[in-house]
Length: 333
Image (cartoon, rainbow, N blue to C red):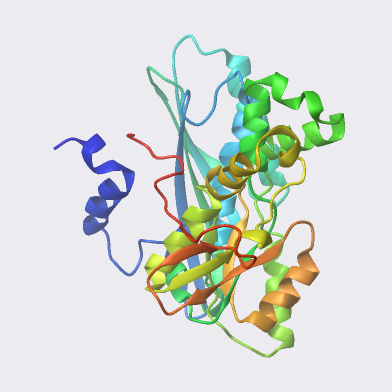
């Protein structure tokens, strides 16, 4: 049996056997260090030609996206960033300027949340790779986990989805943007090259919960692998189902100008790398959160006590569709 036969999810299932079950399975590991505080740790690896290329990102934006991916995982756990370490693999022919720009991009992203680079490693490699480990801290009762969703809760997407995929396609195929204004085109490309991890959502969320005097275990994860992937992963971990309303999906308006409605839907659900959060919480709190966040945030559906995860259409025009993670990006496929 080869890894390509079992895929990324199959390999993860095998590797999780070597880890404490109460720690692995979310966007990051949570290790209690104090009675009311936990250390949150996440690692992300990026490989030239798989996660970035000079054709679409360049070293500065590759560095920014590398940092954003890790900060997004911390946000998905409800954690505040503390610091990161970077292990970099480069060839002997890699330009020094490329490395400097990569670190400038990382630093620019990290400085937004005052998270310094505190160490790491450098090795020779036949292909440029970067493995970043980010450390954060969270109050115990505010830890966000995939397995916390409850039937009847609302599902919130904190912003537009599909923009990053659209930006990538515009960089690869510039002719797609001929119907776009310069502002819309730049916004879609920026969504791909300089995504902002949604750490800004957390203070708003805690403020709403505190105002209601509620200590609720929020469910959620980030949408770096796609909106549909996040919803499916949360439902699997929580042993619940979901109904997602097609008309509520946060589709960027500019997508309708460059691709068909079906492609826009696919990019919204499965495009990936939008680095938004997908959160599950009681409907009244979800409404308040969406009102406070604005800017594309939306209640896209609700959690059910069934096992199926369905995209539905309240108008009856489209048939129900089962959401899956197989349509998004998969390693080893």
